[in-house]
Amino acid sequence: TDFEAYLESSKTRTKVLYVGANDGMLHGFRASDGEEVLAYIPSNLFSTATGQGLHYLTDPTYRHRFHVDLEPAVFDVQLAGVWRTLLVGGQRAGGRGYFALDVTDPSQFTATNANNIAKWEFTSANDSDLGYTFNPPTLAKMENDKWALVFGNGYEDVGGTGSAKLFIAYLDG
Image (tube, rainbow, N blue to C red; front, side, top):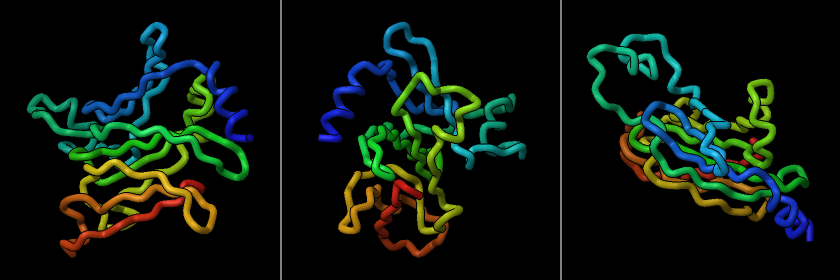
């Protein structure tokens, strides 16, 4: 019944379309007028080094690179007893990482609220067996009653083992 009440209340929230892009951002556009209400850059794309990260987009010799091009997935989950809507995105050919954003209430998409929107990131810096994140994650409620994303390690992990791995990333951190 808690979930039914949550679904009923979520019917009135602002409708937003989410798309990953090769400019290094996940964008959210208000469905009613197309205005951008959210732009998120995964932290592993930040770099001031020439030829690295988003800095490369300003290089006069720029050639196309992938960045945040995994189709985002949206899930309703219960965290700490409260139902929330999380968006999970990835970098696909653009990098070795996933991220989760709380998109429950688009009216809260402000710069001052950014820390409450960005829930977590999981990259090859966390585990070198994570490769390019081509596969969309699957949401599962685990036997310990925690919600988790389940996904494969992808291609070309930096750990170099060459073995297939399965990750379970808990959504509550």
